[in-house]
Image (cartoon, rainbow over all chains, first blue to last red):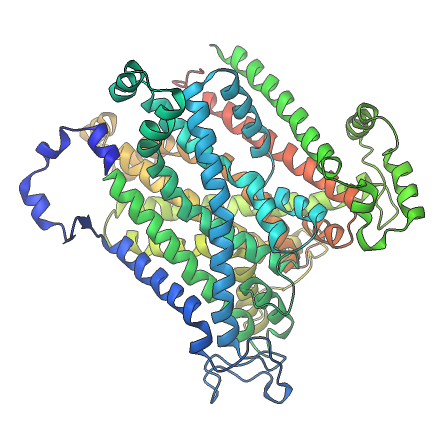
Length: 294
Length: 313
């Protein structure tokens, strides 16, 4: 909203009225189908995460060997059971909490830290900027997953270490995005005006530049969350994530691998859950990017 | 700046980045609180084992000397001793590199094929159903965990239809191509998902330019304009994205190798992590970083040959 107002104040007059009339409006927010689909999907996922204990009568880690390997649509087990007779639906539902948490926590530190670093280096420039760009060059040389795995190999498996490992490299895209935006913004009139009336650099960066450069970084958050959830699932597939019997989609896929022909649903269904979350977040990210671009 | 000066600058930057990469890897164990020997050994740690490891890794020497041992060792191809296999790390890793390289090259080839086909198809059908279908299809590929997709391919094309083998590498060249198809396809689809988006956008953008209108006006056929005039320019930007994505390809290969039980570096890396075989982890991390650096350098340099207009800043 605000970046449009500052970036091109004359645009409002150029848009033909007919076009404005066609757009669907919910209050002030124009909703396009991509964004809407993404939001609805994510909403459903969040509802499942919150209400997981109400949605299923089963404990996700309770083993009932008499009920092992039941196929989907068995009475009482809509998505079937696994090799320990655990209810797949309840494991998927409870895992939603964990995977959403991984997505959210993995991006929060990188987003805040990366954006602030990007704004500071973009605005202040000089040696600070050069140092940052060289650090970025070095970290970008590592394949993301390999660096994360290497860090986890030292810290050991587990959720906290996963956040640390992802955080070490995760801030880079945010720093690059806000730095680029800041470079484009720092010579605009309102920044000069703020400097003229004697605002400190800190105040200019936080009060004037930040609100105008944060939108693209915020949009990237959704891509970052997809990446974080996939990375989390991958690490847990490889045995480096949350440890069993905690239900996690990646780990469930790994557990089902050895029973592929016997119980295809053990691997297929948790993957579909990952797919739904990934598609929802990507659609939201795409939708927001389109709104900004077009 | 001319091409020679640019290449000099790029190489200088590469040396710096290599230096940074070795510092990161070297510092990784040493920066953490506690005794690195105990950190590496984990549960297996005893005082005696730790002392042995300290001696072997040179951890009891001054830091600068340790770093020099590490870097000069790498330069000579001496990457230390595997803690698990009790073999030189160099032999262990290099034996597996060809499998991983073959997989990566195969995946890149397939990705090029898929990207060109669907990127062009989507662009010339912009907004119509083929475009939408491709967009949705590859959105799925983008958000699907590659290990899951690989397992689905195994289940469907391997175990059920029996068209492809589900594990291993084969013995002859023809067998390699056969055995590597599913893992390469798994990697290629994910890579293409990113590339197609970019290529589609670039083609659409290029189609609007004046010289394309001129080519049409001259009476050139649609396909000729597309292949000779549009694609050549559109591909430049896609190439950059490819360079940026190469690291993801290398990372993805590790997981895919594990899924398809391929005897490559990825499988070794995962084994080494579980066994806390730190020298091997270290070596593979350095090698993969060097690979990424070299590929990106090549991508950057190839611009000047693909597009003479490119000037270097």
